[in-house]
Image (cartoon, rainbow, N blue to C red):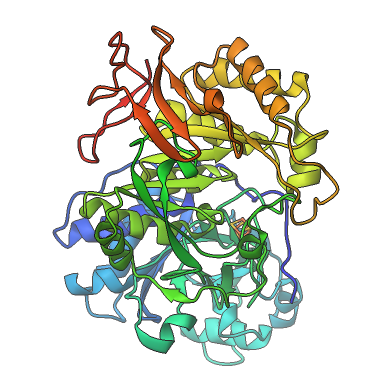
Length: 552
Ligand code: SF4
């Protein structure tokens, strides 16, 4: 089945993932855990109606809510979470040891839509199966079914009969003063963290995905990147690895990799982050973009998961990096943002071992997923593939603006050390005008100390009709970017001693000389100061745990 796509999430500014997490934290706090952080989830200010549904190992464990709005939607969701955990009379109160296995789903209801109906047949005609929730009131109290109940009762008549039974009415009874309303919901779920299986079952393992919700149309919409794939049962997103299974989204690329490599960190490229150190690189499969010039298309454009051959739990990745003498782990080879749940768990294991983490990413993300993804990283190289929407639309299959938003976010709102790479393709993105625009944007919006790497294109994948980038083009680009105010501009994928070196912005002398990916001369003090004049060089040069970033 082909996945369906939509260009826009229904409510791109709503952080429903945070709302569901807050509901979990409210339960945890009631069980004696740490107080809920109360970071207000964006987009849910003001009144609103919610239900909170708890499931334990896939079985219902509580559900409480109201179709009527509360003055604060967020407070209402937290109250309903606590009530579902401890006051749903169908279940014993939740125990502390169950919390880590609990899935918490928050449904946010639309305003109620009155249904004018004198009998059952009239009501059934107005009901949209799979989409509408239904609320009935005979004057003695309201009974309701959320739209999620259609998953178990797909027939309209059975759905209505079951709701009447829930209200305590006999079959065939139609209350004379009955009032009925329909509504839709959007729902977000916070999943527990499962154990990764060993042995052959590892291949079929699916990890609960974050950043998706259930819009009113019955599909599940992924909110990781701006494609906003809206999926029906069994469908996969455009990235291959995020998939709908039943009523949840899962990550199919957790705990297994397409392979490892030990690289100099300069190969990523990162020139101002732990220079001269080695990094354990690994990736999975799939990508949310479809660059026609992709130089790793065997992995990024794979159409099945068969290349995920090596089992790699987060702890095993960190242990391997330690054993191999690496100081960091890199998520690279394919786009890591599409498997961000795996990234965050590996990063946590790495930090526990005193290792740094870094990613090579296209930065094509929605806001909440962006915050989640970069929280776990120490350094990043972002591919800024061009400086035109047209190039992103025609050649890349995405758009430029979200990438610029990512770069602004990284530089202005995080401590993640950030470098940028632009692959220059002859005739497509290498004009003086575009290079100047791109460089001026970096200098003005991000600052002149952000390193920029101009990298050489080689014909590959669907772009075999273009020549490789001449060295002269890379040098011209470097000169233009320096004139625009950037202090650290490099040429890459070619041998170019001048373009590979880091120069002190204070005295102009070379402080790091490189040959290919090898550091051959390092003239920096322990914290990254120039040996000659003492000027602080922008970057992160100290071991993990003591790392400080300098933007001088
Ligand atoms: S991350 Fe994948 S599934 Fe999610 S919106 Fe992007 S392409 Fe679609």
